[in-house]
Length: 174
Ligand code: ZN
Image (tube, rainbow, N blue to C red):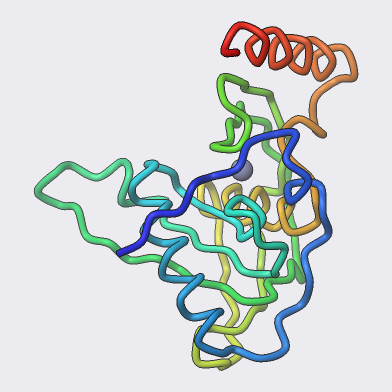
């Protein structure tokens, strides 16, 4: 079990377009397991590799664990390599936060249903059809792989206020 530090904005890894994974080697398998541990520990419903400082196209998602009653808790992470949204339908607006953007929430309109193609850890092609929170989490994490965070979905004003707040906090932490 290895929990990695989650980077926060304005870390450069969060604005990078993550690279396609061409070889699922030991490094990738270790990274996937560390990311899963990190997501459960946070706790969060998903994590992209950019958030642990690695710009590789790898995400982990589990939208049930964080909300399950203690006795029903079962870890069932979905680990996706090179995920790609191949179908998106409907639209739904909801407030979203992000582990890499502390103390910030913004309403984001996302597709209600998505179909995502990816590879699993064995390199097998898989297709996931998701709706509701799972669909939203997949879109959020795939955004990260494209260097986009919830901040980029906010208005310029809201974004600049947040950056000012971060700078103030950095000064007072010194
Ligand atoms: Zn996020």
